Amino acid sequence: MTIVFAIFLLTMLVITAVAIVQSSNLFVSVMLTSIFSLLMSTNFFVLDAADVALTEAAVGAGITTVIFLSALALTATQEKPNRSGRGIALIVVGLTASLIIYATFDKPRLGDPDAPVHQHVAPYYLDNTMEQMGFPNVVTAVLSSYRGYDTLGEVFVVFAACIGVLFILDARTGTGPKYVTRKMTGLRHHLIPQVVGRILVPFIVLFGLYVQFHGEYGPGGGFQAGAIIATAFILYSLLEGEQAALRAVPRSAQLGLVICGALMFGMVGVLCMIMGGEFLDYSVLMENPVTARQIGIIVIEAGVGMAVCGAMLSIFHAFAARSAEDTDEAV
Amino acid sequence: MIEWLLIVVDIVSWILLIIGSICVLIGGIGVLRMPDFYSRIHAASLTDTMATLALFSGMILQAGFSLAAAKLFAIMLFLLLTGPTATYALANSALLSGHKPKAAVLEKKVE
Amino acid sequence: MKLFEFLGYYNYWVFAILLMIGFYAVIAKANLIKKLIGLSIFQSAVFLMYISMDKVEGGTAPIIKPGVVDQLYSNPLPQVLILTAIVVGVSTLALGLAIVVRIKERYGTIEENEILDAD
Image (cartoon, rainbow over all chains, first blue to last red; front, top):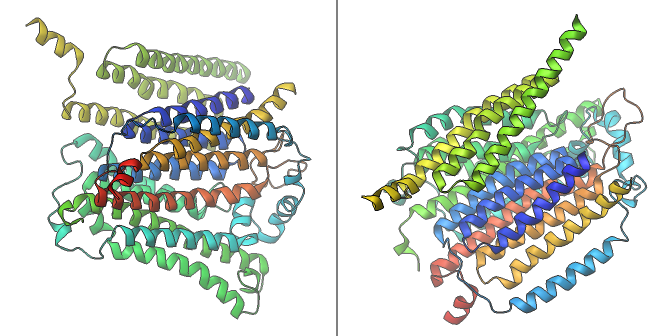
């Protein structure tokens, strides 16, 4: 039964992708991208990847769509027809697709327990997590402890991308005169969505915090929680307007979250070195290595959550503030 | 006695699940067959309300008294709150952006 | 069993097709936002391939159930890689969109051929 469901979902994915590329209305394409992400997330869940499904649902279907829409508001919603180079592109794509499909026959089939991927380090993680970390979610353990270097790198990539967006869009700190003259007031004239949204915001934040601190025992962790909490604040700013949202979480607080989060992660690593261990080796932090690792993981997961939440919020506000500005200033 | 009750609960839950699935199906057919935007939204809103209610009640009965049932109940409340709101927001913004129902256009022509 | 084997390849076929749909949007479309959408489809296809590799037949999500012996779990490593890649993906996408916004302000269009003509 699951197999039928999986085949249906995968086929829907292909159909949605074709529709996304075919549609000449960019608005339609972006909304279909959201559906595509939701289907992808269900697919991940069918493939036993609960943590990834949660991330894809929060980031792909939620935040990506909002960022795309705010970029569309600044550019164009209609694609101009262009047919040049289409034939060559189709030939190249068709040939490459058949080559890749031919290559897949050499891959181990889905779910093969003897596949090379399952032989190397994965059994070590699965066997030792409970003993060394004292909690059951192996994904969180690998993410924050066994492969902590990778995660530190990823957090800094998010940090760098956020700074890049702020530089390119020239977002100013503080509330200059440009933000005061803003006329758009959110959804004031839509009473029902506003009331329902106001009820939802605190619950979304609460759910985000649950995902953050329950990440050791169930699917969840800093990346998902950061995205979910950012969604709550983005919803708030859609409902109440840009200014109210900036009053609730000012620009400096958003940047502070990103910087503090990334620094917190790095500082824990440095602290481990000062205590006589290796970088990001939490076991030296306290007498009992298991408790020490748990505390280290909670702290760095909080850092990841703060960094992701702050980065998503500042990226969103950089786009949203730009659409509010007068365009005559632009060169 | 207990076994009897379990069988009844099982039957009721399956009836609810089937009603919910039929509602989803009708909603889907409606979206494809209805003539204009507003009647399509009307058809689709069936999946927001009736189908959500029936499917989730069925699943809660299947889950019995457990944490899963409580979670399903919370999801049901959430969907019942957000689904109709989203439908309303969609219809409202369509109306505000000047999208006329087909029936109104026809009436004008007759006049 | 036969059906399961078929699905095993079907996952990878969908990966190949999605990858190429995304690639087509990147090379054949002149609209810059469409190119970025294509890039994100391309990215999602790669995610799908990694997550397909982590599946173990008869396994479950890698959250250890205490006291249960002989339970198979899916491979946690690809999941960790993709989990972080999704968040990094959206940040880099935002960077791309920011550049597109600036291009629109400078050239007044986001169609590639018109930008090349303007230069």
